[in-house]
Image 1 (cartoon, rainbow over the protein chains, first blue to last red):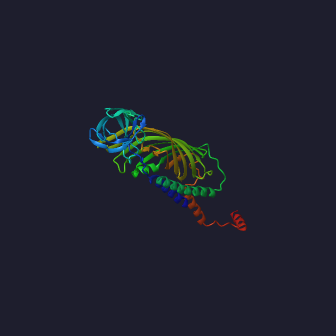
Image 2 (cartoon, each protein chain N blue to C red; image 1 turned 120 degrees about the vertical axis):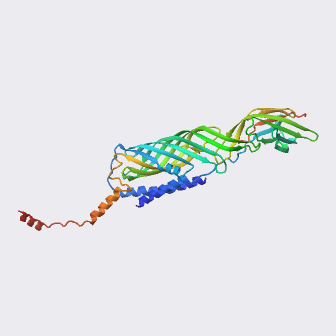
Image 3 (cartoon, helix red, strand yellow; image 1 turned 60 degrees about the horizontal axis):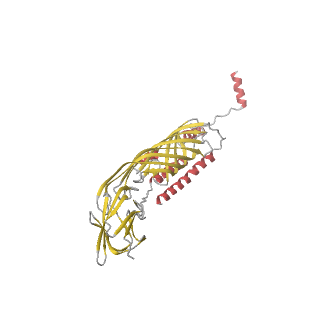
Length: 160
Length: 272
């Protein structure tokens, strides 16, 4: 009789142990952004002018009057094939706007039903209007959770 | 972390309950050792834990049946096949993950209990495999910066998983050929591949997708063979109760009076 009770009790505990617990494990660093670094003469530089970046098709301000920037995380759109970004630089006596076109493919990424769905991107081509930006180089085409450099934005060489 | 602690405590409790049951039983049996035949039995089992989980509407359930062969009442090569079913709604999101696919496992159990008393204390290993398709939907996937909203429907994403399971369990005879057993399993993924679009939340047969996991089954097995209905084996219900009743009846019966030698001789003379 005692053995029977022990057996049934063990069955119940076994069922409870298997069915009871659950946890949610979402990635803490879940921001997807394209990391751009500014270069001049082959070195990372700080942009002393005031920089404003807007998305051309929606006029959404992505960066608002930032000064002293050397690296920027820029979000890319979920569904556009080409993102058009306007880089506006304000100095003491000038305002220049350079346009950057980023061609990309986007794909969904999910980890769990409890975590928000993210969109990863693969940058295929970048071009610009070359007003104050000399050239743009793709160093890592995959835009995901990692904050490694994706684009190198080279300014024209200094006059010195 | 909380989940692992709960499961660890459950396993400790279970082992602490299992061991006295087996050791207590072996102490009682002081009969001479018996030899089991090479093919000691064939069993077909069903996991009632998986069916119970499905019935109560658990997030996922593995419904499986198993077939095994008993060799000398020690080794039990086993094959398990089942269907894993999962439909999971996100708690704070509108995401839905779903899959339903078959899986199989092959392995062997070893009976640690040396006595042929109907109880089996089993340790074993399994190799599991599942090839499956899974769906992930999100009705209102919103771009947080640009504000665009579109539904996301990913269907038929393919995944493959292979894993190893280390089992420890106990099994006893309930009645006639019916046996009840339960086991705890530690599962380790060996190979996995899935779509780059997203990780499957659940792997059929393995459980929630992780590097390792704990699981278990509660098996109702129908064991047919030479040792399955061995009279020396005690069942939890039925036969031994009847035996006990018979013993009590025998004890209650009045003893037959013994005839004395002179009286017997006199009776024989009278007959002549």
